[in-house]
Image (cartoon, rainbow, N blue to C red; front, side, top):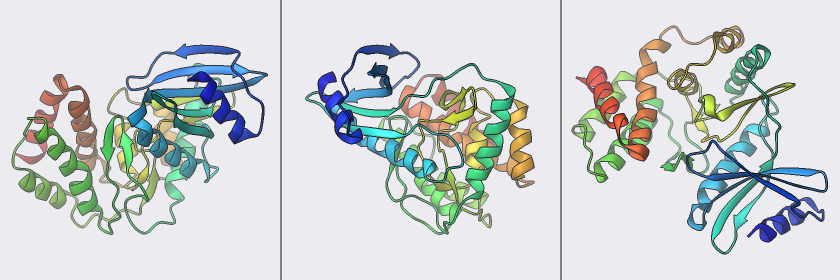
Length: 286
């Protein structure tokens, strides 16, 4: 397997690369992760089951879309593919250090710049992405309330129902979600899509983001999720607001957007997230 990965790297970069050192890195719930090196070259490798290649392809496409804007640091995509029994994604290895105030300030400014750099009139993406292990549909739509209520909220409700967990009549809940966003039509922004502390890192010269599940949507979805599982430091929000102030009604939508991520955690992990999902749906819709 590792020989095949080394050959892929060599082919993509036009070098003769062989693995001299390999170290597993902890921290991921979904993939195995490794730091490999040889001949002064360093790479970050993700591994999963062979049938999970589409997940890696969608991540690579998201990373490349963000990287093309030259506004915020993301690891470069080196290669992806399959071995006899595994799928893999090879990325640039970024040496991370402990978080620092300047990094959070830079992250706020750079995320605001990414969100400002739209150039897109519709919501969605050219391909479906993966939020964790969950397929995330991105069919292009011109109406934000329809996109979010159908392809985000309604999609997760249907997936959970297929697992045997129902939270009410899906059509009715989707319509209520649509009505809550009715007449709200934000400019589509390129989103990270899975913007929480675990997908942010810091280097000596600034911040970096990784593991995206990108699409064009309301930038408030990213900012809302940054406050759900371990709120970012205030330095981040201050610099974001200075660069690209949030709408005055953002707080009215924050919990609705975060419900999508709680539902996704309920779908992947069940447990207390099912209870949290039920409580949030009652608060928002009943």
